[in-house]
Image 1 (cartoon, one colour):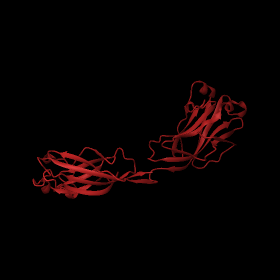
Image 2 (cartoon, one colour; image 1 turned 45 degrees about the vertical axis):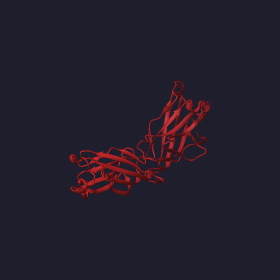
Image 3 (cartoon, helix red, strand yellow; image 1 turned 90 degrees about the vertical axis):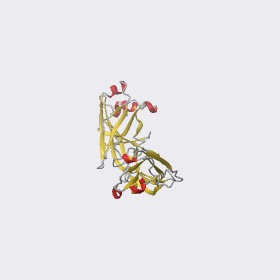
Image 4 (spheres, rainbow, N blue to C red; image 1 turned 135 degrees about the horizontal axis):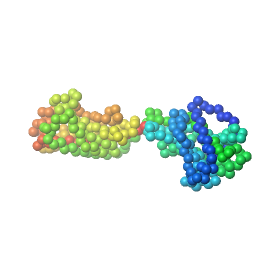
Length: 311
């Protein structure tokens, strides 16, 4: 991965946010001889995040490493982090010279910080130290078949949701229609009814119908709303800008009753529509064609014009 830089120090001054984690391995030769290709430390915390060390005592075979120890720092338990998270950390790996009681500090010679994010959870050294150097008794790294190594981690910068957003306006957006057939209208006694979920602009939607009205339309109107149905798939911070038409189809003459609007949909505002879409008298009149054989046809035409996501 990176080229190590070595620095012998008797002590390293730590910042307030820095944490050190030490792994002491006794009978180290047994670890490397008994087919223990990989060892993962317990989880530790630094800078409010959780980490672990990942050691390959005989080299990381997946990267064709031989005659070296491979050592990495991995950020873990990231499923609870917000969308778009990113962490920069200053990382110093060390290997203890037990004879002189000081540490060989190993850092990246090309960069001061490591960048961890959703697609890069691990950073470190494929060639942390040559096995020949580790096993040389004059170096003091392996004493009585025991070695001590670890890492110092200081989080220097972090990105999380709420720090920015990306607005994508959609050129040449395409309208998509969905027709919902509602039977036995006169027998509908629930507060509201919803269509099946349909897709428009790669988003999920539903139509919601209140047969006896809602809000200012309660008791004397049919209320009709478009619902954003992305609850399970919507990343935090997402907003959808859509233009939409809701229609009750005139099944006799084609003079449809409709309403058109453009609005933003989000987790806090997931519905837009009309409490007084049509009066009961107008809706049930045999001359309008909205209710034929106790069946009405409700149509939604939706165009997604823009989407906002967190950076």
